Length: 168
Image 1 (spheres, one colour):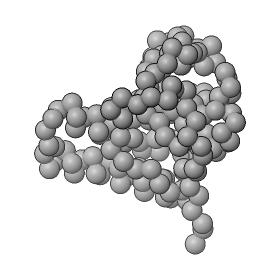
Image 2 (cartoon, rainbow, N blue to C red):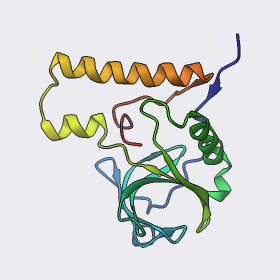
Image 3 (tube, rainbow, N blue to C red):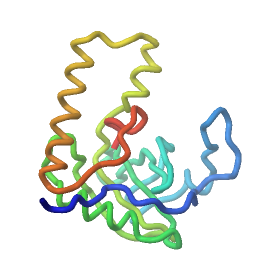
């Protein structure tokens, strides 16, 4: 049986933010909000982050489309580059975001990809209601399909949670 590769590798907690939390959300600094990646992706707002870096909604200033951009400080290692290679090998799979760009800019490794939509956590908090069984079953089937595809390529995910489901 082939060994499984991992999609997530622990790195440091470096981020683009001031060291201040407000109700578990970090304040987005003017430095990050004015940042452009590869001269074509303007960061708009932070949508997530963790040990692997910070994720932003960004606008492709050439096409006007919104994308997700994940950033990791160069000195934090090469985890984002490894993640890019994993995404590249999974391109075309169900629930896998299309990669738009990968490179280094402004002291960061950066990866731009299609923004898939709100996270499951966002949907639940916006509606304030429980999901009906049919919706839960549909979401579950989509997740299983995506995970099966990932596993057939000898990868495991290791970071499945409502706050990331569907976001990137």
